[in-house]
Image (tube, rainbow, N blue to C red; front, side, top):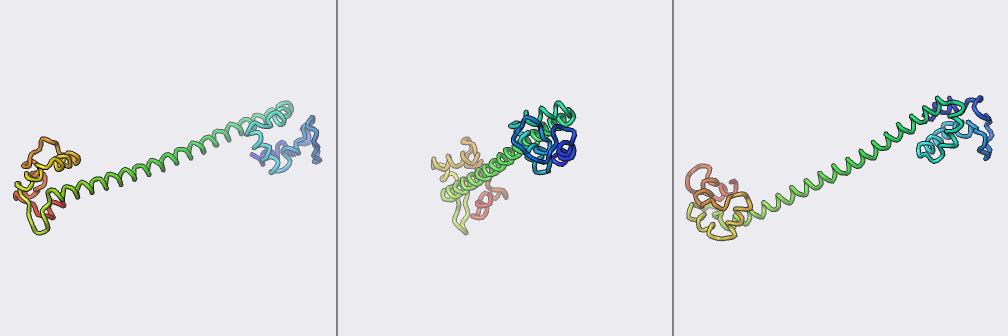
Length: 185
């Protein structure tokens, strides 16, 4: 856009009072002052984009070269949409990053909570290494109110009996569980 402005406005000797001398009198439009070099054109386009100095540049272009003003308006709208897209993209990316962090934190919390429950269940029910556990041990363990609460926390309904719990844990259907079977169940 800046190069286009330099070529079509900045070097247009018919537009306004063309002079490479810059003066502080803004009564007459000097195209070189605003669009004479790429740097000047970039600065003028930036100022125009922010709408800070639109009247100084816009009025002479409207009167002498309406097509150039149309290009300028298109530039302001195009740049505005582009800037809005960048801002929205940054906001969406930050939101997604926070969402992933929150999901990871929740997963960590769930994992640590499950590990604590398993540890507590192991203390109440699990046979020691080399021992096995049968229905009587599960019935004795379920008599403890803490065991009932732990079983409810992992999703076992309070209406389940010791036979139901044993059926869930005893995949082989032998009526007893080893330490390893209990830990894997």
